[in-house]
Amino acid sequence: MSEQLRRRTLLLTGGAFAAGAVLGGGTAPAAALTGPAAAADEAAADAQIAEILRRIRPPRFPDRWFDVTDFGAVGDDATDSTAAIRAAIKACHRAGGGHVLVPTGDFRTGAVHLLTGVDLHLKAGSRLAFSQDPAAYLPVVQTRYEGTECYNYSPFVYAYGQRDIAVTGSGVLDGRADATHWWDWTGGPPPNEGPDKTLLLSMAADGVPVEQRVFGEGHYLRPNLLQFHRCENILLDGITVKDSPMWNIHPVLCRNVTIRGVTVDSPHGPNNDGIDPESCTDVLIERCTISTGDDCIAFKAGKDADGRRVNVPARYAVVRDCEMADGNGGVTAGSETTGGVMDIFVRDCRMSSPRLERAIRIKSNPQRGGTIANIDVRRVTVGQAADAVIEIVLNYANVITGAYPPDVHGITITRLTAAAAPRALNLLGLVDDPLRDIRLHACRFDGMQEENSIQYVEDLRLDQVWINGVRVDN
Image 1 (cartoon, rainbow, N blue to C red):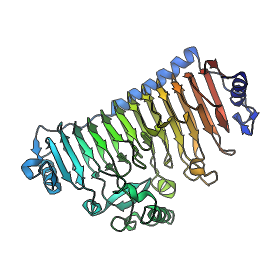
Image 2: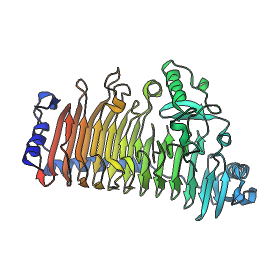
Image 3: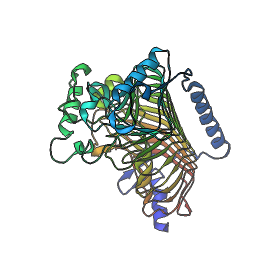
Image 4: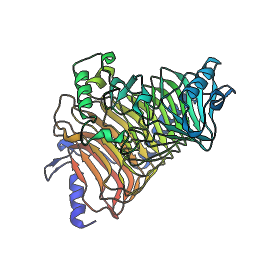
């Protein structure tokens, strides 16, 4: 780092005016968090994590097994096994729960709907190959599309209002989306999803009841690969998911969710987020490997008018020991933040790719609103990122005015290291809605090529922070 860049960084983080940026509202920076204070802060965070983990208990299932081939499924990558898989799930549910076994083979299927007490178990070498025909996901079901409730094509694996459900094993759920199936709905010549997205948002703004927001056939809103809606006690363990039409794993309004050892291999599709817990409580994501065409893990809480109507936060989540490669963000809050995103703890994750844009990202705008608070990140290792290592911005989609400014405060990042990226920090509040209480402690950023970009931040605290070998504490 040049001496000129060092002086500018210190000025930008010291609560003064610089190049049009207003930091700290003219107030002096708070005392740095060092020594015993840092230890006490980490102990308090660890206590919160322990309390969350105490509440999270994966479901357990009776030792009953229902092989889908006994119900007529054929793993020849040609026969439609939808009816057989559904029959096995119903039989398992009626028997009081257990495991529905998908053995080795390639099983073609349409929508799979889980029921209470059912573990869909994919044996090693098994593959659910989902139909590329939209009609295979009718009739429509209640869902949430980018934070707005409606009726639409069924997610490929779906459950509504169920308890004690799981998808486990080492098999593959292959959404089979590509440039001519599902992904082509995102843009280009009509037909595409643009008019339907506009219609859905206008319905929500006008207070149209959810039951009347019916899409599906004749419309172009893409379904998710896995969505669990208003469910409790969910386990995803060991599976691989790939090539979803849009978001891969999407629990919505759920409680007690465990996602562990899952591989998301979907780096090419649009809006192909990896794991998006939306308005969920008590979530554990651990030992997952994620490469996507959008955010790897994104906590969400509804969007705009519909988010205010439902008004349920994403809260109490732990992300630990995960690997992220391609993606717009490694761990993200937003952009659908209307119900609030709070009490999210990230630990011991590794992120690196020339196509990983940012490691830690918080994004919202004054139309989304919501409180984003108590986001605590520790011991994250970033190899390479293509943009800022840490980005917190309130102008998402270039929106800087609106009646619902988000309240973003209480963001702590400790012992993060980065080896190469254009810049360490991109922090952008708004002139009437600054970011507040952003703390970096014991972080090191090497190989940074550009200055930090910091505007409209109150109480930004840098303690033992190094950029290109220069300490930039304030």
